[in-house]
Length: 178
Image 1: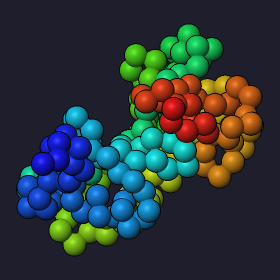
Image 2: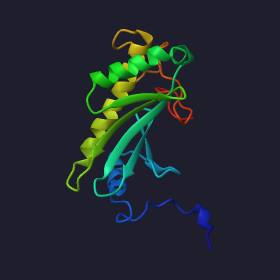
Image 3: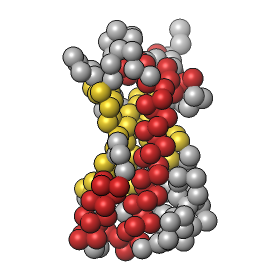
């Protein structure tokens, strides 16, 4: 008999978490390798960044797509600049909000998801705007010219000073998870 701990981690039945099941299906179809963490969030990699999706079930299901990045010390030391940058990005972009807690930048995009909603498009657009917002946030916080913080909506590995710090999993945007 095989060891039960060696069996793959199967997602819960679709009727138990219907929105999360739809999200998992979309990510698998996109070629991502999603994982469900201890909080029930779906984690996946996009442009070498860890992105999470939290599906809140109920009468009005909500899908929250978000990422977390540790701020560089030079940015975190200026609380007024951090708050002003969050405010500026929040007012500049639609469907995204930023905030900082414990020197961690959190960028989210939240959606009410009806049964007929195009979850694939919501996931793709949310992921893209989150990565763009992270780049914009760091460009504004560090006073860089647009495009100096990376290319293609992400912080690039060759950037100097424009990269966010490690994310919640210890990876630095543009460098991938350890």
